[in-house]
Image (tube, rainbow, N blue to C red; front, top):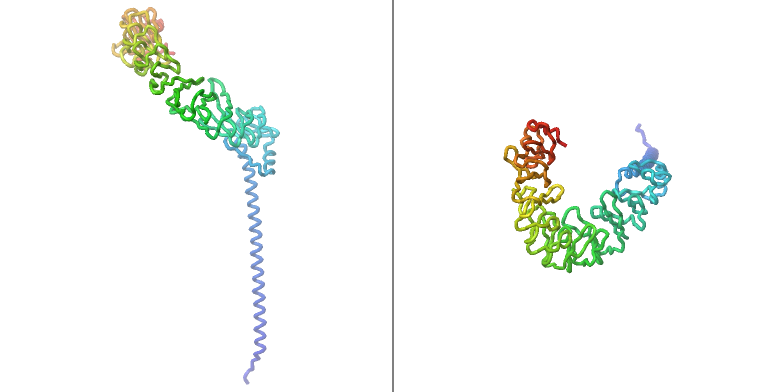
Length: 448
């Protein structure tokens, strides 16, 4: 007999199975969502922990860098004061600590080599160079606060000779064998401030605004800022005058602009002329003739039709028409019809030999009678070394001992050997050294 299927019962069983599967899917969704939520929470917590660790390391790093920058004199050292808590931590870390290089912090005060730097904020103090420092409040010169300075706008300019902030110009006036003096120049018009470039190296000491032209801490009296410009080295001009600018003073040299000319040798431009006079280092040379004035080679001598000049001075009893160098352009000796002149190339000192006939002088030959020496010279009666007479030297037999270059190595230059010899003596730099045996002389025993 065929089995009868109850369709109603089958449908109920299917419904129960569907409900069971639905609940299982919901349970799985809840478990999956919970896992995602927990993973997110742990990720956020881990990220937060990482950020805080980095921040803490950065804070410690900042403290270490603070000390390192002071030690190494690194500019632009800045303390971020926006976070008061961080600032207090830094102060606590450096309450009593040596920063190296002579600096140390003791009880919130900055010291340099056991001397307290007054008014300095030790946590923002910044060495800028050998002379200037600054913190958040002041600019310091040689570790002393400059009253009225503005540290925020302060900057060093023009090769360190000048600095400026929004209030003043600061000028370091240098002197030999001493520390420079700080000069504060006030009442500058910063809207028209201009530093003037000089066409030679290591210069740059001049500036101007709409009111004046300045050289260091001095005002160039009478100069017109609009038309003021440099000509060369110590010389400048404006629409009215030529100016000579010296280290200690400046002056109007001439108003003969159309005929002014600088006369010199390479970088030595001490001489200048206009229609009326010759000038040396800004000083007028009386009796000079600018129309015939001219340099003589590059040795410092100048001539006009009447006189011989050296370093701005007319040489007494000189004769420019007969003035010449003895032997060749490398010689240190000169002459005219009245005098013999020795020019020391090292000291630039000029010595004049006046007691002998100038045209009887000649340079000395060496023992092989070949080359000549430019420091020794002789005439029929005397021998001279660097312009000074050698007493008792015999001019007839006197020779330069350049042959000992090969033997003992005592003469470095063929034309500048300090050793000389006559029939009885040996001479070193013009002095008789009283050698016992002039034929077997060992020059190495006399060198100094």
